[in-house]
Amino acid sequence: MFERGLICTDFKDGLYRLAQFVPQLEACGFKELTFLHCIPAWQQKSSTGIDRSALEQAKNKLSKGLEISPSEIDVKIEISSARPRDAIDHLINDRHIEIIFLGNSARNALDEKLFGSVSADLAPHLSIPLMFIRPQLISVYTEEELSLRSQHLFRSLLIPYNGNEESKILVESLKVIAKNNSQTSLKQCVLLWVVEDISRDESVRQSRLNEARQTLDKVKNDLETLELEVFTDIRQGDYYLETVEAGINYNISAIASLNPAQQNWLEMVVSNRAKEFVKQCWFPLLFFPHKK
Image 1 (cartoon, rainbow, N blue to C red):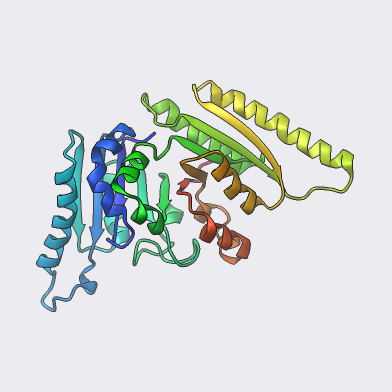
Image 2 (image 1 turned 90 degrees about the vertical axis):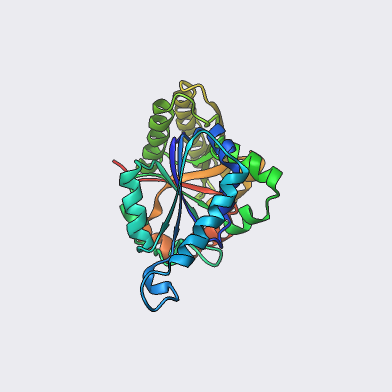
């Protein structure tokens, strides 16, 4: 799906381990990868300016991983003393980055700080997809497990869909990426429609379920033109609980969604249900920019 990726790590999120699996990431479709670690000047112990030794130690830590898995693709290591937000913005433009990897918060939800000192002000301005991977998930994988995961980061995506404008934008974003990449790693999609507000009136309930089924069938047919295997699932109940259960049942790689910081950020911040979903969802979350 993507050819140029930026992997940001603070060495506490486990993402630095991906440096050992560059050939597997190449099999996932990547042609260029950049690993970024930031030690902002004000966080360094040196009182005389930039701590060169700290920067060199960080670079060596990532370089050792690359030595384990040499590859033909273009891989760069960036150790920066700039603000993480500034370093990320620079690399997006300089290396034409198509996706950013960050370690998701291990403590709370999306309104907490991300990637160390980078707060949620990063996400609202992004024009490229963003993937969050929980540190607990990637840190406990054995090397064999992480090797397989690196090959199939985007193989099967769960796409929550309810027919609204956001759902349509999400599907169109996926279609554009699949069309623009001749060797896309995306093989399967699961379209999930969770009907939460079910009326006690049987005729109303059936009408809503039939409408969901007809809509999903049309989206399914559209995605299948891209030679994707597409499943549809209509469920009744709590949106967040049903989404997690569907992810388990279909053996997905990640859950796709629009970037919440660009649409209903306030709602995500104040909604306890949304926070609980992010805390309890162990799947990688692939956020697409909210383009209209």
